[in-house]
Image (cartoon, rainbow, N blue to C red; front, side, top):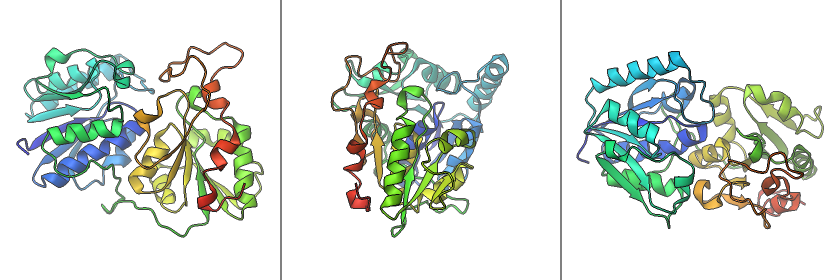
Length: 348
């Protein structure tokens, strides 16, 4: 690996941040002497602060991702942060998004070391980002249209930067030990929440699924953020059932608990990416996106066998206000999920 001082920009959503830990893993394991830093959102601190491969973490808010919260003060702070980081003279500043905003931010920090992926014509990711700013990126890494996986793209960037080990995402506890799946549990994990309404599977199906899990003699653990608690409660068939619990605390609590479930059933959201990082089996209920783009390797995919004509909309729905909005995910039947659960002890 020719370059030793690298800054990785992670300005997107929580799921993206989990996936992109694979880049840090590949670069750090391939070259232990490398100094890898991260520029990210302050709320993502738990993903990085115990990672032994990371030298420094810098925080800012960004005008990208689902939760922007980006005003004048945040813009001034980001400009100040970029100026301060420029003085550190990183050999490479890397982003794996290829959006003009990340490209310009990387250029502001390191004009000569700015490095970005770029999407070939016809690649699905080209429809999800605001491409541009390539003239400010001296080190472009092309992702071909016939390889749509985000995980493959992370590996492609890592390899281009000299990595010789797989770019497998990984998360670490406070002691610097990686979280890892533990077998033998009688718990099935459920994560029914996502950042966009178009990704949500109906609550009544979650209730029926949890009832089936409990009828099979297994426990159900329902995951979400603290702000999701009322929605999570609406997914329970019996709020007083001691065999069903809600875990809606800090990220570290989620990571620890996710180690001890047989399988996680979730949506196109950060939970299934976290399961992949930990090694927990997962089933992903997929709606508006092309399944090959964001599905973690080895994850079971459940999608609509007869999607509507507006599919895929890449999470930019045009069906709102119609008689049957979000049918790409809302019409996925319970049986499509439960047929994949027999290996995990759930009897349909």
